[in-house]
Image (cartoon, rainbow, N blue to C red; front, side, top):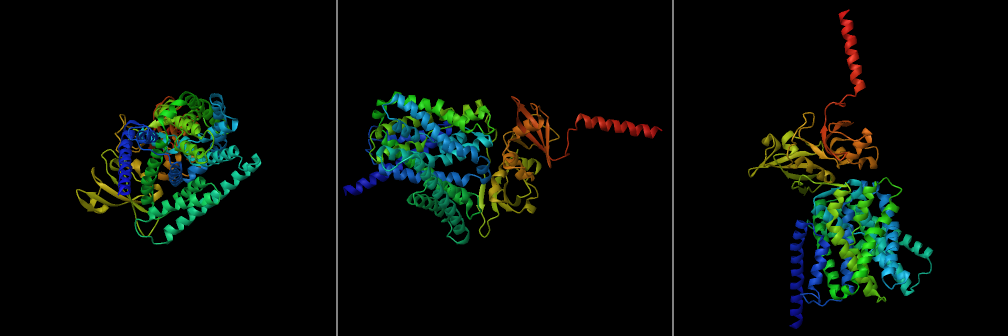
Amino acid sequence: MDFLDTVSLTILLGALLVLAGIISSLAAMRFGAPLLLVFLLIGMLAGESGPGGIRFDDVRLAYAVGSVALALILFDGGLRTRMQTFRSVLAPSALLATVGVLVTAAVTAAAARLFFDLTWTEALLLGAVVGSTDAAAVFFLMHARGLKLRPRVGATLEVESGTNDPFAVFLTVVLIQLLLARGVQSWDVVALTLVEEAAIGAAIGYLGGHGAVLVLNRLALPQGLHAPFVAATALVVFALADILHGSGFLSAYLAGLVIGNRAIRAHNTVIVFLDVATWLAQLAMFVLLGLLAWPDRLLQNLMPALAVAVALMVIARPAAVFLCLAPFRFSVREKLFISWVGLRGAVGIFLASFPLLVDLPKAQLFFDVAFVVVFVSLLVQGWSLAAAARLFHVALPRVDAAPQRIELDLPGQLEQELVGYPVASNSPYLRRGLLPSWAKPMLFVREQRVMSPTEAERPREGDYVYLLAPPEKAQVLDRFFVDMPPPATPDPRLLGDFFVGGEATLGAIGEIYGIIASSDEEAATPLTELFAARLGRPPRTGDVVVIAPIALIAHAVADGRVTTVGLQLAAPDPQPRPAARRLRRAQRRLAALVRRR
């Protein structure tokens, strides 16, 4: 009976922790607090040194849960990354994910050796443990603060965060082997091992992703099992790569990238399910890692650990970013922001458990210092992320809330899905009937009645409209249904009240109007940068850039940058150049002289 009571108590405590995590995540969204920080605090408070009094020292369980959680997180990151985005920033992101991690670890090691009694190998191990960034923390905070990064900056951070974990894991394992003298002979052997692990992981991820797509689209799985099948595939790919001595984390990310860029059944169901699965996995991992931390022990090395955290944030990460991005066309402000967004997160604490698993001397010191570094990074960099984005002009606040979108899969085909929106009073769709050519209204819901487009005649405020659209383009429809107030001084030349932010990319506009960019880099170019490149001078309100079949008009300009762009479908040259005007005046005068004679 005592055993049954223990099991019931464990279930109760686990469920209460999940409920606390859900409630605290709402508070985190409200105040912009880093979600990881909240879960770590919950774990610490529930631990033996906190009010909860739970004794937990099972490092193996924490490692197993952490492995599952990180595999799902990386798989989900790959699933949401567009191949076009991946290709456009692959070179800078790959440098940051490899050379950047190495530089960060080396500079951090110098600080660790200065403030702690460590050998160079031990100091490098500490640097490798905290050398990678945390994508989940970065993008949760951007969403919570209502900020949207410039496409190139956001894509670079996204791909770097998804691909730097495998290198950090490999570097950590190699250094642990060196400290334990377990067969690492020379650095050329280390380099060869890294290439082999990357190749095996990439091959298994690629084949596993294509295999999952084949099964999803060829086999008639029962409804509701598509999403669990995809999540289980992510774990199979991760574990198989690890068993074959490949990079399991790289394998999981690439499998997600392959599946996310192919047409699959139940696409929206898979995305929603993985949202929940990754959230629960993160919660469990962060709480367990928090339980492993003892506040009393953390205080013993608090000051030198804080010094290492400061060195990482203000010296190591900027040095790595400026070195790796030097060959690419990133501005100083963009490099400074990418440097500041190098948040340490779950991976750092997870890697810090590796020395504990093998009973490495000073293993507890590595864990405690890594915990403090992650905590400080989330507290300082996490809460200042939105301010840094505005300071360095790499993001603009979203002035309009995204509309509520409903996506329904249509069995029997993969090319179209049903996308539903409420029709808002100030939406471009209601005001001007604007829709892209590839979206077709199928039915309306008005006052509890289901109506065909013919019966509805025209949309009204308060309707719900359902459209057929390709799944990969469904998100583009949001801008047509956003409830945005009309401009204070509407321009009669513009396409009704249809405006986009200056950070919108040419590729996003091209998806609507059929503009074909000359390259992936041009497609990822924000409109504000396009104005600067085409005009060759600081833009002014009213400036026009023509990209057939539309014209872009600078509607609002601030600090020498276009912040709001109006779209026009009319004449290809709405503002004739002075030379053209003079030529036409001369032609009219000549014609008048001819008539008088």
